[in-house]
Image (cartoon, rainbow, N blue to C red; front, top):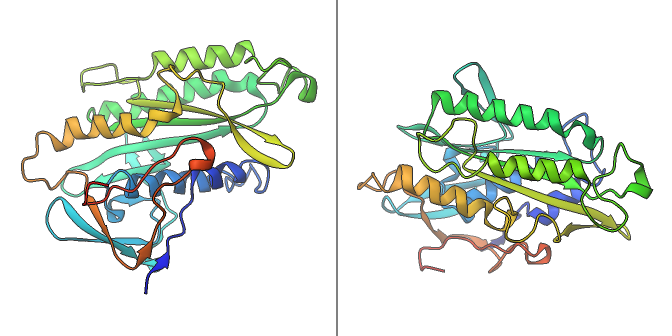
Length: 282
């Protein structure tokens, strides 16, 4: 009998950032990590066995391109891979480890809900982490996803504000956005190591007790708009790992869903819908 698949959607992950879990424990960000991991499996076509953290799913290959996806609650693993960089080991929030190849794709997923004056430190950390990993693995497809809280000047004061009272981003947010445009879009292995293959910025706010996405920033045409964050990762991965591999072993898979009931689309309520990658082309 089929059972509904419990998926940590972006909507679910955003709710967790509203203060339900303590920031100091890191529990508030774990749902976002699991969301990314689950989406890389369902939409991206990466077998669960390749990922950490890993949801309670397992895959059985029919051939190198088509796999059956089924529930396996005991397989869930909350751990992270520690990837050896050019300078030091780095625990990457979400990592795809391809058998016979090694770390091939990863996402660093962060959140900031106050003290936006410290975003300069976040830029430095992000740049250093990216360069460190790319020094050792030039082909590593690296994404940086940052979720920012919409906090107005009159509500929290200048130190913790991200937007003014007219809905416009504060200068520190504009600068942060512009810097990450320059640190995104790495396409070839010879591009600068400090640039990410994909960067995504998401802004959320708490309104009348509900947490929701703010769609006015970044602008829709921004290179770091979240709408195409995952697609940029998939395109870079396919170019580096699938295109040269005629055997199909490192290719992203298409799923036959077994003993699971899943919706046709996920995250429609956020305005960023996505679908599972099925072997019937849907």
